[in-house]
Amino acid sequence: MKIDVISLFPSYLDPLNLSLLGKAQEQGIVEIVIHDLRDWATDQHRTVDDTPYGGGPGMVMSPVVWGEALDSIRNQAMVDPVLIIPTPSGQPFDQVLASSLAGEEHLVFACGRYEGIDSRVGMHYSQDQRWSSVREVSIGDYVLAGGEVASMVMIEAITRLIPGILGNPESVIDDSFSRLDSLVEGPVFTKPPTWRGLEVPEVLRSGNHGLVAQWRKDQAQARTETFRPDLLSDLPEPPH
Ligand code: 6GU
Image 1 (spheres, rainbow, N blue to C red):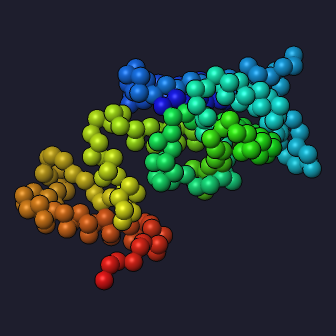
Image 2 (image 1 turned 180 degrees about the horizontal axis):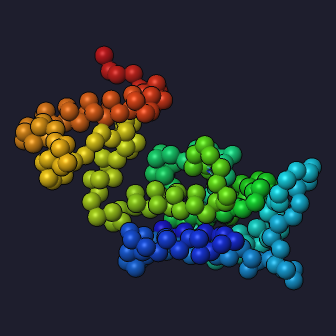
Image 3 (image 1 turned 90 degrees about the vertical axis):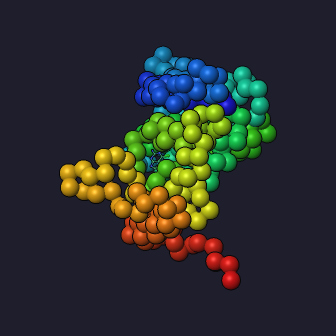
């Protein structure tokens, strides 16, 4: 998979070279290239933003500069890329979207700052046949200062689903949200059996795999009821 990220603060994205993703890049499974948006600004001061039409606070990022940046990245691409524009007003990012994006060959993340990117950028590239699709995506109900951290969140969630990136593919299948029944995961334990007076539940040490499986299901159900009742309200009807 090829991933381009365009940002005003390229070094903000340095963590993408660490850990799992650093190794995946060394192995050639993923190639991540970070670009400085200012490289496509053309005036003396390398301006990338301007005042908003209609008034209001802050600045809006220029469609002219973004257009130059995105056209240049598209012209170097081997396939029609997916353009991802992180914004708190976008479609919610979830495990289903992550899985779908994990099957793509080329993703381009356009990180906005200030009050966001001129909305014509998304409109234009949605109609540009040389891009496979455009997604405006939010990572949750809070406001970040820019798209960089949101892009990193999405890149981590997407790339760990690519075969060969995680050491243990079963831990992908087992995650909260990836199972069909969409419950969050229950508690986990390792040695020692007693720590600061707290015991590991007896059933986990019983060696009875059936009981262990049932206990884990019950714990996941209870935790989901407590913290994520929204996940239970739209479960598919159980078969009769
Ligand atoms: Cl994708 N961007 C920004 N700036 N804030 C957010 C977000 C994205 N998702 C949630 N909050």
